[in-house]
Amino acid sequence: MSQTGKAFVGIDVGEHVVRVATLRPIGRNPDDFAWVGRHQFELPTERNQEMTPEWLEGVLETVDQRLPRCIDGDTNLTAIALPIAWTHYQTVVGNEIPQTRQRCSEMFARSVFQSPAHLSHWPVVGVHHGKPGGEDQYVIAATAEQTACQVTDIVSDNGYTVQSILPHGVVLAHAADSLTGIDAQCVLWLSQASALIAMRHQTGVGLTRTLPSVPDQILRLDQPDRPLDAHALRPYLSEVAREFRASARYAARADMTVASKKPILIAGPLAEIPGVDEIIATLTETPVAVWSYQGAQRPAALAKHRHRDPEFVRRLDASFAGALSLALAASRGSRRGYGR
Image (cartoon, rainbow, N blue to C red; front, side, top):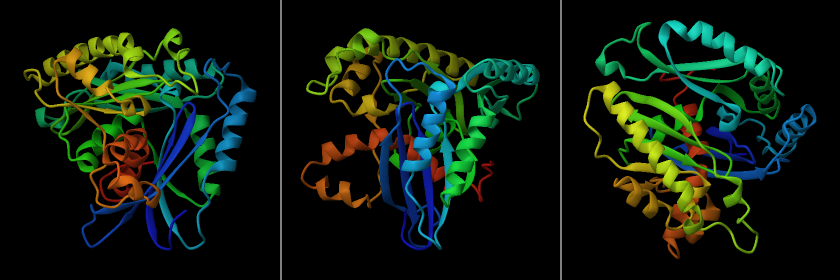
């Protein structure tokens, strides 16, 4: 997986594709990294996949078989995210978190996952307004505990040291500024199978919501010889823009501030399509930036294109925003409180 030594790995398990990114520390500054590894592979999941126990078993087997193997003697500290579509996001009052945990466990027990819930939670309003309490609002992100453990075991058996499983909303928001150099008001993840908005405030991640996914009638236009373009996506992006405005208003009220003037940072495969950023900017009347890695060093496969077509390379970063954000979270695991 990496040259001998210590590396930080992010494994972003998506609905259809697993992406793996590796950061290696350089120099003495603990926050300086080289992006040295970029790998992806497809999962056996069709567009309208029926979620059955057999399908889930096939997904886990594929992860086990296709995950890059570690080199003996390496230390690969790793953070993982499960698919957004496998995660339930909800905003609740702090005092209701125990009951919400129980309801989520009942929901996952009735699903294909047949498991109790693994729950993460954080306050909508940052600690710059004081320590949150039971009457304050929290975002919860719940996924299947058994599946999380199975993925952790698979990754560990392949030589990685798993430090944490984290929700996409948390890692995307926390890593945005460090990895892109852009102080955005939110990160908007857009893929064919899932969408998510994670609002940022001065002390971290706040309101996080899943958004409607791309409708089937638009996805059917995506053909091998004629992939989706920004024009075909415009009706869907109009809905995304409405959801952004609602989320921004809610976050501003909660944080007791006026609407932010900071840009929207868009990530995910749909963010790589030329023109998507311009459409979102027009519809939201807000500046938009495509997620792009600001570091000087990239994997060799990308670096060779950088001088010839920098725009092409810049847009290819957007799909790896989750994996790179997870790798950065892994680097902070022993220093800044992320836990397994």
